[in-house]
Image (cartoon, rainbow, N blue to C red; front, side, top):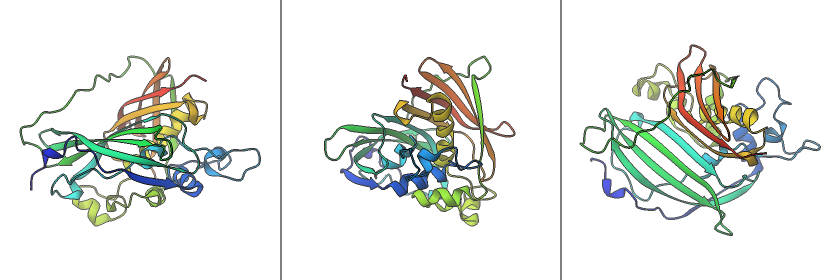
Length: 283
């Protein structure tokens, strides 16, 4: 069955999601916090350290705001779907434990020729007050589903600065990183099942794109926002290549006032997150 384009703009029913201190701690470890030096990121990895208040990594917002869309897109092979882009805006710092009420909708289905790009936006609010907490936008690229004659979608004006980065930070990942990260909710077999990964064209299971995204967010948080989640306003990026668990990642940042452009690359220079933007609130 082809895509149902009538799904565009149809808002889902609200759904509520809550999280505990354990969930946010597990997420932090899942995106590498504490790796190499377990004392380095204690506000994000512990809840009972003397004089340290537990805080939440900003990229947890993407998980907190996840919700089902209002209607089914149609039939397609899930092995052909890859996460293409991710963006979020944090309207206020997330608590170590709490909840949101979220609605979502498909805002576009674009024809990229070799595949279709499906864009989804979610809005998460405080269930008690209705105050906005998170706005999230994600897109999925579904290989083999393009060629239907639709709009190719808006162009991004992101341009690599013509100078050396202002900052570069390298984090390594664990060989078992995907096994850790999946415990935060993403059980897609692409990241654990060799036969499923082979169907998708990969020689072995790959790391979750949102794990790479979370690792990148840690680098931005600690380098640009003084490790203060309250200063982290927004982040966006495009997934350009897969990462294998155990590979090291270098985040390059170009700063212009409160805005930074960034990209994340592997040791061989392969860019894995491109077109990155982050906005940091003043101290």
